[in-house]
Image (cartoon, rainbow over all chains, first blue to last red; front, side, top):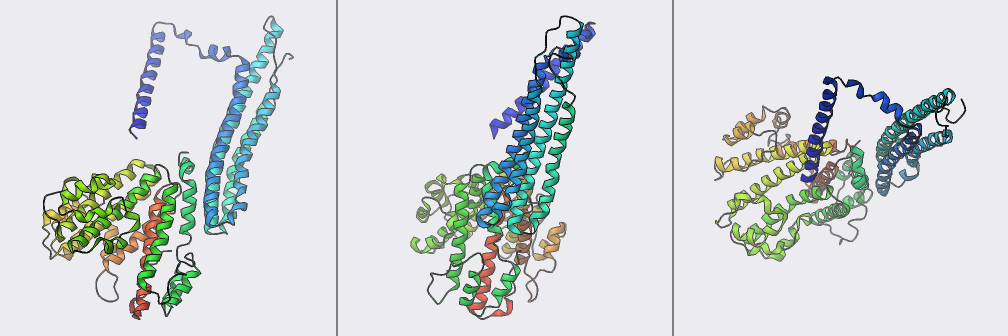
Length: 213
Length: 348
């Protein structure tokens, strides 16, 4: 108990200190008329398109799996616990686990689409290759955005389906007529993951990496 | 987001305890039970509930004490099963619940020793949830200092002793004061532990423990009228983790008769409702019954929230109330005095 409180206060004061340091550096640059040196645009454009694309793919799978895993352990444990005294709930409530798993599958689909899009582009030597580079940079932003988008929606979708599924199992154990009603709530929760998938697919339909324009 | 992390360690046990809770006797079961003519009828009706054949091996003229013991045994087995599977923080929480029973057992053994009863006669009367190693060594102590140094310093109750150890010999009044002082320290420690856990557990448990503290304050006051307990001593026994602290407790310390106690309760909405209509006339509910009803309501509401440790405490309390109800009905049946058989506290 004392250790986590110690850690929390360390993190809080560390955060204050480092953010104060960064603000001080920024003010220092500004007042010495070197404000243009703090160039976020240069930083973002300087990061390689490969990096954006790969991080996007990494985020989509990892965040989706975190959401699905949280959902599965939340609902699975309640199904098992409730099933000890009321064995009839075991089979019906596996639907909640399937909804959580679907969330991970959405992440997998997007990751496969994105991984199929990655291709190498030629180095910038003339105007044509510069246009190709701009196209690749654009595509990599789309892929990164799609990765964060689908990853985060799946994370929260999995979380919510898990909590509702757990409540559905325990309510089903008490009163069988409640299960179908709570399942409707769960379906709505699952739909938000689907929204993320649709928007993500729409986003990367314009992405094209590689060495043709 | 953090709520569902509770399920990692305690989700299975919560599902299990909710399964147990679904087996608590309902109003229809009680209606069947009050219509029984004999204790064997009662046993037959209990077979169709969650209790099943728990009385199957008992010899034929059933006695109420046997029913009481068997009901409690089933509850104790369930609680110990849950406790054996529990990890932190649930394990410490459930240990806190057992400290209350330990205090009762210690006082039982000391009182028995005072009246020269042999230890073998007293041990079966101890509550099984409150046993600890060396519990039988209690009867060798004559003063509270000996009691503390010899036996209790190794138990989890050591920190509740505080200042109540003294060189005086243990006698009737002292033992009650020791019991109430220990219980006050225990309740406040439990309250602070629940507050430290935070989240839903604190939201659920703190009102329940606050009510327990206030209820003890009221009952100590009402029971101390006409005894040798001075007002200052009485004020030291009130637990301070309830809603009556500090003004209500100060007013209770000055109270001289039950009317004053009722006036103190007027300032708190829930307690005013409990004191109204409570009395010892036939047809009115007694104050203790109203307290039990309110406690049952708080404990049933604990099950409305998920992902907290309070369900384990509430389940234990509700089952105990159910045991008291069944024993009350059994007594009325056994003594053929059915006038007050409907005075059980309905739970679900």
